[in-house]
Amino acid sequence: MKTALITGITGQDGSYLADFLLYLGYEVHGVVRRSSSINTKRIDHSFGRLHLHHADLTDSASLVSVLAKVHPDEVYNLGAQSHVRVSYDVPGFTHEATGLGAFRLLESLRTLGLTPRVYQAGSSEMFGGNEHSCCEFLSEECRFHPRSPYACAKVFAHHCAVNYREAYGMHVSNGILFNHESPRRGETFVTRKITRYVAEVFYNRADGPLKLGNLEAKRDWGYAPEYVCGMWRMLQQDRPGDYILATGETHSVREFLELAFQEIGEDYRAHITRDERLLRPAEVNTLLGDYSLAENTFGWRPMTHFAGLVKKMVQAELEDYERGLEEVWRFYHKD
Ligand code: NAP
Ligand code: GDD
Image (cartoon, rainbow, N blue to C red; front, side):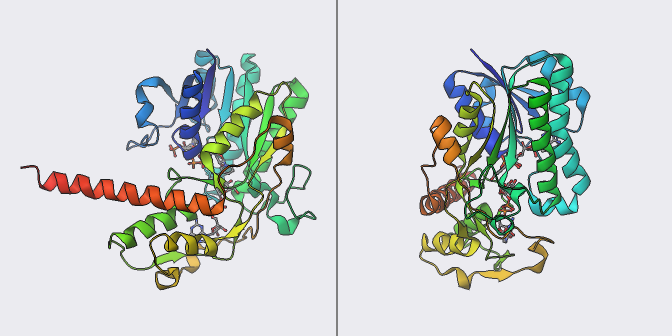
């Protein structure tokens, strides 16, 4: 039985990766940070099968302690302050957790003399958008041009991973993942914000119009469970490397809105308003990726495309909402 350690196990990707590794028969350990309220809802269904440890990417001592205890075969560094807009509000913390956190993890492994395979969660944000590249599709060869504190931190983490690989021969791979979404997506990312609102409209619970920022931004949106399989496949290669996972299609926020509202037979234009506060000081206008290296090296390719993703997310949201309403109804009709 292999042992894996996941930082960021309570997040969207960490929770799907934990499900997948448990399914494969791994012993799965996860790093959770102390929070004043319980935030483990994405992993509660597997609680008894997971080994959870308190630690924080901003605290080297806590990382050393967990790594020394677990002796993992594989480490997936998914922990991060991952919200691009918020990284402008908390740039210092973003650099600590998202950038230096990766360095602390690698350096802890090195000083402990541990040699697991390591996955570093890189991002398409590091490219700053197709407008900063000479290629139609962004590939592993394209130059980075980070346009937020979050993206700067991810570029730093990426280079640390390459350096530990080259300098110390560690088996460290960088995944450069384009946006991937799911019903477990955080509620302040634009896809989930929209699908939640669509369910509120459907059940007549919407409280005023949906406030959004830039509707013209385009993203290469895939389905998260498929991307965590790609992370695992990356680490099964004899040689570490850097790989893009993407769909090879790009769509605007406006297109996402159109399709999501179509699912409930409504026109999005009647339900939204623009909020300048949601604009970013520097925007990444378009992301479109080339996943051919991953496909040719380990056979990964996306299965869910844009329309299917929107449908899945809206349907899950409607089911979730209905379940919630049923619970409330049962609570008030106990007798
Ligand atoms: P997410 O839902 O925001 O989850 C982030 C996770 O990191 C959470 O478990 C969070 O814990 C944890 N975390 C935050 N600060 C931490 C700290 N100081 N120490 C330890 N853990 C900390 O993100 P995601 O969408 O699953 O993404 C996973 C990783 O892939 C992230 O590194 C993200 O930047 C990267 N990525 C994501 C995408 C995407 O489209 N989803 C694309 C490219 C790259 P709490 O639950 O306590 O907040
Ligand atoms: N969050 C949000 N909220 N974004 C909005 C809104 C809004 O109300 N209105 C418009 N947008 C636009 C943003 O300006 C951005 O261009 C686009 O919608 C997507 O925003 P997010 O869903 O917040 O995701 P992101 O692309 O900035 O970042 C995500 O993907 C990266 C990979 O490219 C995150 O998961 C990052 O962690 C990840 O690295």
